[in-house]
View 1 (spheres, rainbow, N blue to C red):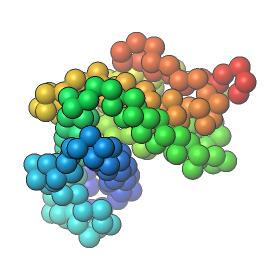
View 2 (cartoon, rainbow, N blue to C red; view 1 turned 90 degrees about the horizontal axis):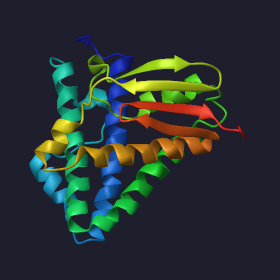
View 3 (cartoon, helix red, strand yellow; view 1 turned 180 degrees about the horizontal axis):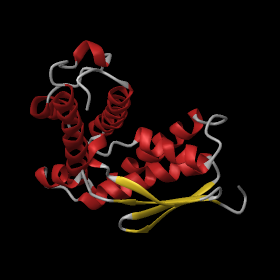
View 4 (cartoon, rainbow, N blue to C red; view 1 turned 45 degrees about the horizontal axis):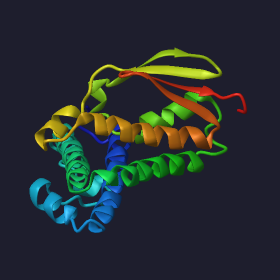
Length: 206
């Protein structure tokens, strides 16, 4: 990454903020189960200061600062989901609903501006945190006017889940919920074809 702030840095920081927003909702859900998730996360992983990037970033270590913030929010997400499920496994439906609604919210904001499969897939890349850009976590396998298929090249999340004693499968089921919410707003069918391959395609009514 460049030593100067550029669009890619703001793009990544926005995705960090979006995942922190999901974590904040899980904090609230945790309160219903008498869990102080926020206090534990802030103490263990650090407080997230939701300020403009240029006001906070270490300009002498842009890449390192962003990597630290990626790790911070990844740990918090994994910790919150894992400990909420330990407290009450039935809370999974509420967690999935949070992710589903977040996907729908993104879809609603893009109505009228994302009109092609490629533009809708871009929303996936622009909103879901998949490590640093250099990780190249995903790549497109096939694409036409009616569908797009992509694969996960590497899992950049599992180490965080292992560190908190969590199950990485939970991450991907929740991610499916987000993608289903996004797809629904555009009348698309979302499918996880196999553990690392995914597709969005126009449905019969689309």
